Image 1 (cartoon, rainbow, N blue to C red):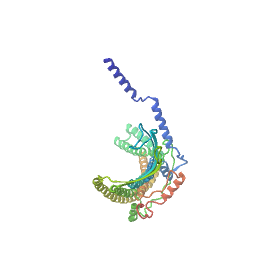
Image 2: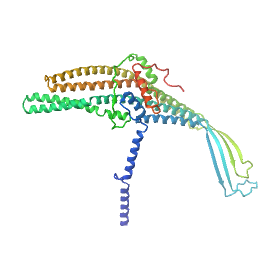
Image 3: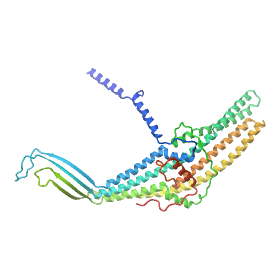
Image 4: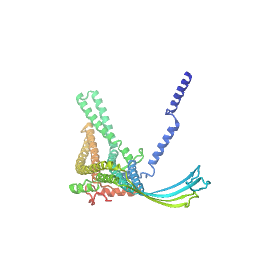
Length: 494
């Protein structure tokens, strides 16, 4: 008994060890690595190689066409559309085919009728059509709700596209700042480090008072800290941009920077027009209308349960029993049924569905107010960003002139290295804020476009990259602060 228990325990222990995953097992890890490699290759499949410098319009077009997250959103919209088309098939009548073979141990015989006893088996076949009126009506409203879910998926794709365009604009200008400032930042940091070493040497030699030397060093360290902070902030910009446009992360990217001449704000004061455009085109508003319509469809489905179920059947039948007078015949029937418990349950469900309608209507009004708030906040943010960018531009121009004068004075040995390093740091900070200000303007424009519901009507998966880039360029010429006229109505009536 003891040996058998010990053997059983050892068997269980060995079995448990056998199922513990071995991190060194070549099979699963090899499959995992192979799948990862296949996924990476699939993500880059049909992605056009980068030819020459990357402009912002091409970056936006590449993001629309190749961004993996946006592709997933587009596939979700296509899947929802396919679900809607499949739901339409539920309204069709059902067609049933049946084949049945019967074996008996005793002959089928009626009282008082002499029946031969030879045939104990028969084959029955029938082909019939069945149509339930109530189920068809419910399927119709289910199809309308599936259509609403498909439209909601499309609105989610639009929102994802707006968010993606904001991220691309921000990453592009940060990457442009990184490429323009990287060498100057590193050169200024190196000069500051050399000046710091020289100051420590002077301090050790007691050439200057210790307090003056320490103040000098503190200012140098503060400038180095500021410059390194800018360098660290700009370092991941190119990687972020490559990820957004689905380029290899280790591929160097040269940007084509077309610096805008200015920021126009015409049309931002026409708040009534902006509000009408937002209420007509904003994706959240359309989403709320669709949700209200779907809630009403649910109410209609509940009310259908108050009607009896009417079912029609028609079938062609065949029986191989040779003792039947007719082997083929047509059979037609109609049935009417009603679940009496619906008299108790339907009123409760109807009240619940009506509460859902009221909730959807309330959410629609809340969404409308939230969208109008977004429009006013976005227009103010665009104005503020434009003003901040103008001040950053002025500050950059002043610091550039100061830097030229400081370098000239240092060359003439009329000024120390600390003053030059400080001036260079201020100039680089102004240049960074200049790029940052322009990125804020671009993002504010994108937010206003998102609030207004203005985006490119395109199918990026089917368009060539060149055509999509040109479409983005033409769209950017029509600025968000000079909006288009709104269309009449907020949603297509079915």
